[in-house]
Length: 172
Image (cartoon, rainbow, N blue to C red; front, side):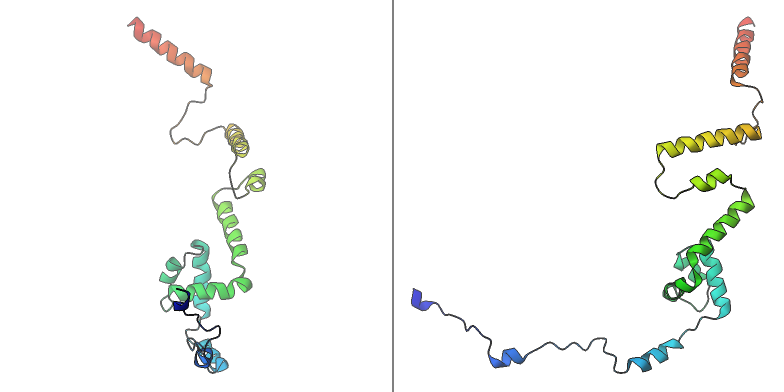
């Protein structure tokens, strides 16, 4: 039985050792020439840059929506422009400023609400503090955020009125 086993050679033959895989996919013969040709393809005009910036503030990182407003640009062009210009344009800071402007236009936020508006997980403690702040603001303003008008009396007077109505109905 031992004589039937064939032991393979430990080293490959010289022809097999010479075979190597040579990958030519994506080979660029002259990279500088290629770079200079791509530089002038589909240039961004100043008007297109302004439209991009304006629409980015309305729809942050929704490049499909932004690309609809630009006639000659595709979604991939918008993505590429964003990542090439995000360091120089500082889009995060522009977003923060536009949010503050919108908040200032709609309603002036209290100073403590701006300080406590930390993004992230809302905890029970923070929720309770926000509810207390809303109740205090409603008491100061003298109203509520309900759309139907409410009587200006306390809850105890409302309960008394309900009791009186029930007594009147029973008396009839």
